[in-house]
Length: 452
Ligand SMILES: Nc1ncnc2c1ncn2[C@@H]1O[C@H](COP(=O)(O)OP(=O)(O)OP(=O)(O)O)[C@@H](O)[C@H]1O
Ligand SMILES: [Mg+2]
Image 1 (cartoon, helix red, strand yellow):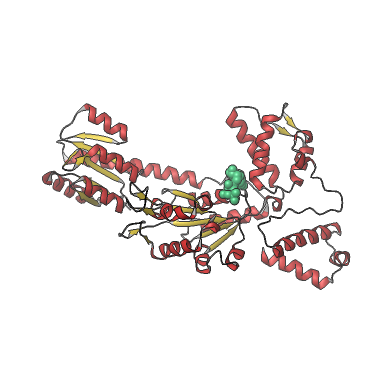
Image 2 (cartoon, helix red, strand yellow):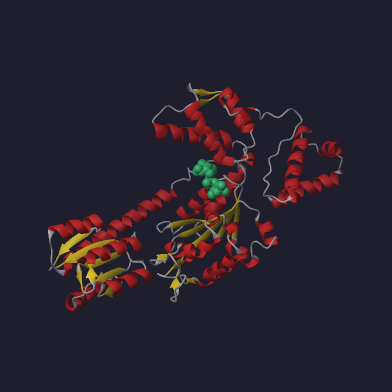
């Protein structure tokens, strides 16, 4: 699809001539004769290139250029003027215009410049896509659960369906959201992130939907909301479980109708984005407790993804540790430190309640605090040094965000798994030690499998 061109020119003769030439060359064009008209168009639709006259009846084209780049940072601008001066040319380029043309000029010249601009944009777009298709080196991990997760991410990313990412804190949910965007056809558009937990409920509506000037005290200028800013791209609502039910209703309506109204505004504005949400809370529980509306849940969780906790990803800890060590040494221009086998073993045994984020922090601290070039157990923080569980002990870290039932279930699974492992997978022996029947053990195991 060719990008739309905005032509801002007040001289009717000039405007008509350019408009026709552009259309004949196959470019979709919209015309504005004044600054006000141009701003209105810019607020309504996205343009690839803008051709701006400098002197306009109601204002200055250079000021319009600033507004344009604020409203549509991705738009390329070409400034044309009959009052050419070196200063205004320099000024326009400083503000961010791609090119400058003194009037009069033959229409072929502007068509050529335009083609070149569009071609550059296409190349940039292709580069972005190429980079996006590079193997996902970023989400480090080889464990079966991570492989399965990444395969699903690659399958669903190009679809436009809403994705809900669940997982404990620090597991990499935001990284998954970024991958979903990067691997989607919307990769060239914006990825707008809103941390719903960090915004007071009273401000959330204006933040999401934007507001008109004077909509409330302090609203001294019109502001685009995050939904509008995500137009053409991906909207990532982090900590979606913190959105109050009343706001869920409004969001739901926006998602269904793909239109919004700014706070204090009348006009309906079309919005087109892919919705990705994330939470570290148990969504089923939120729905049960009435904190999340069921209709909202169904709408956002068309595709649910689960990012597993680090303790359930055997083998990933060394990979991640190495990844962080290398990244840090690259950033600091130093030799990467080494992990002694004993230190590595302790890292692997530690249950990582803070998941990948905690591991990242530990490695950062070690890199700074280790005097030599090798990290040994005595360099490790005490909680990790003390991890080694005594023989025959079970160690399970459970988030207090879970319900009692879920917490007990997790412990039960870990406990049964450990006993089974100690009995070399012999179910009869394990059941006897657990004090339950073989049938009961079998039921518990198959329930654990089907729920995964
Ligand atoms: N698989 C991974 N490979 C490389 N880095 C990772 C991986 N998972 C997480 N990280 C890094 O760990 C940190 C925490 O990840 P992220 O912010 O995505 O977690 P989160 O699930 O969104 O956590 P929270 O629920 O607290 O917001 C980030 O710096 C991220 O880059
Ligand atoms: Mg996060």
